[in-house]
Image 1 (tube, rainbow, N blue to C red):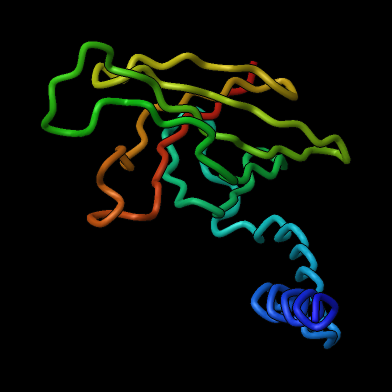
Image 2: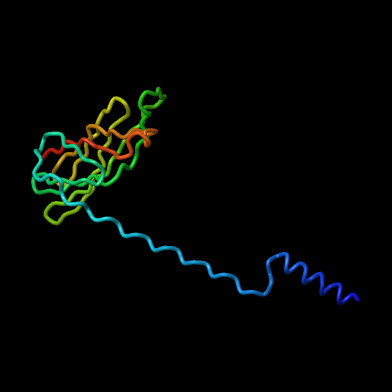
Length: 154
């Protein structure tokens, strides 16, 4: 009697825990990561050095034989438009540069609402982010960042 009681108890515990003796369904393998997108072809060739140029995210252009691509907004902690904040934040964009087989990156930034730029230098040029129209909290209004960048030869 004890034996049948314990056998019944074990069967009950195993069945309620999902241990029915069936083999579990296989876990699907994770999908492979997609390769990084290539740098887009220039949308405008030979824009003028020393004049602001407007980039939409993932656009590129040729400046003096150098390819400049706007590939990412790396930081955008600026105060949303029409809000008052203790710290105005900053915006930083990543530019991918290529000239004569040399590849580099530039990370120009602007500070908050005052749009005070901090230029950076790379490959013999200065890059100044003059504006970024994408503000935090406005994704539903405008989801594609647009950067105005000034490129100058050193």
